[in-house]
View (tube, rainbow, N blue to C red):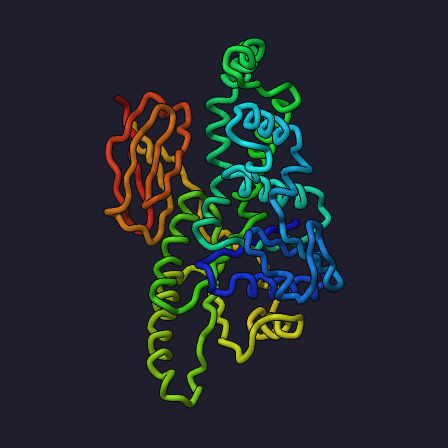
Length: 387
């Protein structure tokens, strides 16, 4: 089965180099591989020392790299929606088409849709995704579920509104409603979003790998990242500890740093004991160029087990407990005091820090309410009972 590997982590920890090493290793093993960057500050061209435009570039046998330009993808693949949006905003008289650029959130949407399109084409056996720093990656990955939720709730009303208001909207409100071509594109996007969400959360297809370094701030963000990924049901099946100083460096200046790194490496290993953990040394030169990427791949990714699917944790689950129902959500490394939840119509809403997820309730639970909740052994347990 073709697979997708998503690399994430705090900015500056070496995600791009680690992703590039995996792509090199995959291609060398004979697998047709695509290395994709969704980070707007692309650097794959710098790593492989080649020029990249809006399209894929072949850098060696079995290996292509692609720096996604969301604006280019948006303009070329979903032209009708962009045409309508530009016309809508330009008709207000407050903004010109040149001022629009790309709309908030569409970077995430069209980057992911493009990756899904490439995956469905079957052209590549492995797609390796170099993502932006943690916060942007979370926005990227949760976007399909979030937008699908809104479209499911609002889209039927939107279609009726377009049909009723279109004849009078321009004369009465000086605003033109979407034409049927734009609405058809919206319907296509909705269908693609559902496919995309299933693709990203299929544990047999998609793996999320977190890159970290043994420093306090990065370790804490790695824990939060892992918790958020599990909140949204993504399968994290690998941790990479990068830039480990050699113990025999022979310089007193680095002694304290080496001791601190030992401490935080231990924390990472204890926290993520159930996951495969890969340790990467701090190299004596910048990791750019095929020779250095090969060096990293040969030092750390010694065999093909690194590409195996490892469904380490399960998805959220509902279970009957007497006359009640229990919802279990895996949220490791969460701060109990930072968790909040409530029931809203047909959803249960879980908040953790700045992130929120709506989990749709099955019909069986629609006439039930939350009785109690607790956080134990990394699981948020929510008990529902009949009102």
